[in-house]
Image (cartoon, rainbow, N blue to C red; front, top):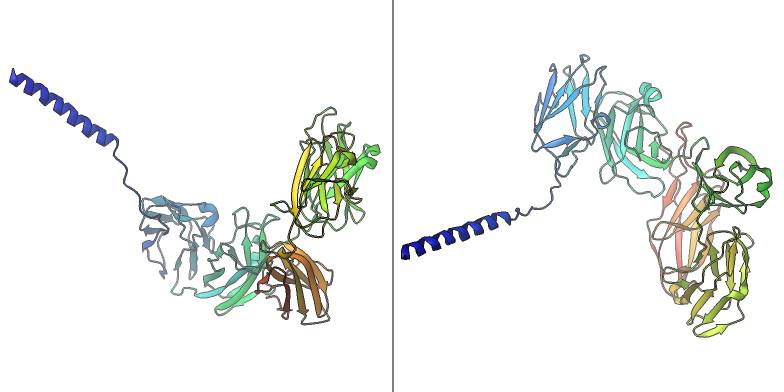
Length: 547
């Protein structure tokens, strides 16, 4: 009997032990990973070796220290000079096999540039600007071009920009049509080096792309080039390329459509000088249109009081000259969704700048309003001696006029149906609470500006910490610029050398080989303090000639 019990307990113990083992296996945690890998693949061996002379091989094998993948090989990898039949690239475990499909020219240096094609499998850390060089003769080209790339607008160095080189013969045939065979990418400090070059006359470009294909084919891409060609007979360094966004030569309306709220929206590929719009069909609708252009004159909205039409033809004019005509269609009885709402010129924490009017701005043009349905309280006291004044220049904006007190809290109540937009829609009841900001939160900034040449024009811009232009002044002589009631904070000064005296910054033009107007950004940061009059000297340096 005791043996049976012992056997029974032995079985139970075995089952329990097995359960623990299985449970432990089922809940076994994966080992925790170490620090993230930031190292790109490293070349261990090349067969034939890099920089081989008298090269005769048909296949190249590059062995790396880890598994890798090829990214966009047809865009990123190039061979210069380019053979008629391009090489074939195959990944085989940790090796890259390159099969040369065409015969090579005699006594010629070849450079295979991998750009950003090689990246490790896990993190895709890129082996940037890796090149494999060989020569079919006894000589390897060894000339180089080095320099840096900056953004002309910010004057800051730009990383990850493609720097391209074309011989003079190639330039007219390839640039803007096919990707380059000689290129590199700027490092984190904006520097670049192009190596293993043969003596020749070159044109150099820098390109910051929105679509990475190494071809300048988009209006929003940044481009740069030197004014003079590079005649390379010895190493050349100190080349500086200034990126700029070129204003398109031809105007184009990039978008035109009806928005869900019924307004017509238009977008242009470049700003206009003095734009206007006219409705050609139906002709009787032109007199009722309301047009709003953006501050930069590169977008427009048209509001129509009557939507009883199924098609409309609009002409866009600049300086009273027609430049484009577009047609839009909709259902004659098509419905749109609109909610009349308001915005105010207060800060994010509902503070109104001292000595300013409160501006109420509707999201649609207003046809009429009832001031009796608008009330104002100062703390808990009803105010009766305030006025609501329509902005004569903007049919959607209104000024609330009152002598605001600094320490008071205000409540503006816009009652239901106080405003009626041009479509007949009325507002819901809304409340706006705000305070007048303290005067000590604002300061007075005075710039004593010294110009290098009184025969030239300069555009002085005041920028805030977000690099937004707050004020712009055109000067031609030593001047004192005064900025009153500016919020405490940090500011910088940017100056455009207005070479053609037109009072605005002009971009460059690639086809005409025109450089953009030069810009100088003062490195000094101006700190505006509470209740303080900041007087700052600004000495504009002489303009440096374009490279």
